[in-house]
Image (tube, rainbow, N blue to C red; front, side, top):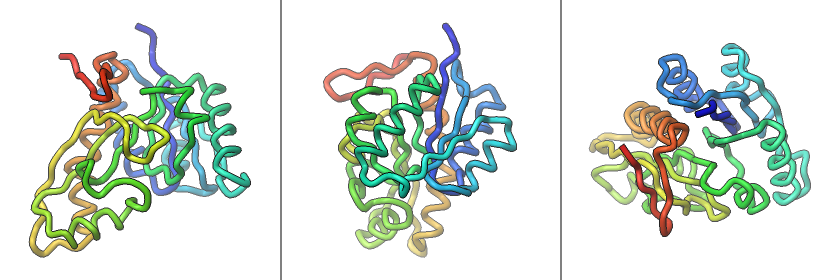
Length: 210
């Protein structure tokens, strides 16, 4: 089994990227290796994290493109150039269209900070997700790793992990607990499962083999 090239897409601080880098150092990404990090914003701290770990970086700045179609085509070309086997959204804030999704079916994954289908879709990102969860008074929230499709947060679910919501939670405290106890655990695990060929998709659902 040849090594799988993992390309990570970022827009900000890169905490999920760091979780993947750390997992890679521990040998927990299976047959995968992070070969490139692409940022939609110049100066994103995620790029610094990549450089400090000798990972190739690129910037593909969203505002340099007039619309999402032209940006998606440029991203598709960049992913081909990088020979991407798996594309991971790690705090990547742009929804790419079918120009990318159709070229990499079930090869793009995202981590979402809620238990899909709750608190997901367009507009549900960052602290907004946790604000809405607290407004609803849910007793558990968590994170979901799913395959990316052209429809936001609608692809087949790979892994989910629940996290307790406390009575005195603020959006920031809930966000931190979900990141530490769910996102940073299930994202590297989903990457490992993919890279070790343990995931198949049938009728819009994933089947994970042992």
